Image (cartoon, rainbow, N blue to C red; front, top):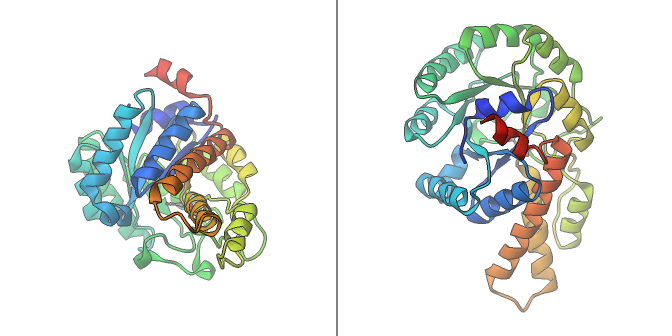
Length: 315
Ligand code: 13P
C-alpha cells in the first residue's frame, strides 16, 4: 500500500527512521520489498532523476506498482530523490509519487528558499509532501551538483529553522558530516549530532533526513576486491549511529551505495566462481536474495523492523 511520506514520518518520529532505498531496476525492487516484508518494516522507495532516465520513468513507476500488487502487505511511500524543479512538477503531476525532494542546496539561500517554496505550493495542492536540503554534502549523487569534500558545509541550525518556516517544507535533509558515495570520510568517522539536536530543539517534531548514510561495509569491500575489484580507501557511516539519530528527530535515512556494493560483490564473485555460467538469472536471483537480507538487516538497525503492524493500526 502506497501511503504519504508524512503519514510514515508521523509514526516514526522520535522512535525509529524509515530506510529510504534508491532503486534502478526490477531486481533491486524485488529485493527491497522482500527484505522489508521479512523484517516487517515500512519503508520509502526512491528514485534519482538518473534512475528514471536509466530504465525509463514509466517503466520504474509500473515496476513499483507491480511490486505493490505482488506484496500486498507492504506499506511504503514513493519518493523522488534530488529532483530539479521541473522533474518535481512532473512527479507531482504523475499522481504516483507521494513525495518529492527538491534539491536547490547548491544555490544561494534565498534562491533555495524561492525554488522550494514554489515546489511546496504545487505539491501541497496535490497532497504531495516535499523534502528540501540545506547545507552541502560532499560527493554529489547527480553529477552536475557534485561538491568537493573540502567545500561541503554543515547545516546552520538557525538558518534551517528559518528555511522550514519560510518554505513550508515537510522534511529537511541536513548536512551533518556525511557525503554521498563510497568515500565518505578521509579522517574520523562520525555524525554531527549537535547539529541534529539544535535543529530539533528549534523545530520540535519536524522530521529530519540524513543523506549519504551508507556504511560501506569493509567486509563487502574486501570481498569485492578479492574477486577482482579495485576499490581503495572506501569508508562509510557507523550503522550504530542510525538509531541514536532517529531518536533525535531523524525520520528518514537514505541508503544507496551499500546496495550497489551488494550488487557488485554478488556479480564479481559469481563471475569468478562460475566462469562457465553465462545465464544472468542465477546471479540475478542471488542478488535479490542478498539485497533482501541487506535491507532486512538495515531495517533492524534503523529500528523500522517490526513496526509494520503498529503502523497499520494508525492508518
Ligand atoms: P549513499 O551514497 O551513502 O548511499 O547515500 C545515498 C543518498 O543519500 C541518496 O540521496
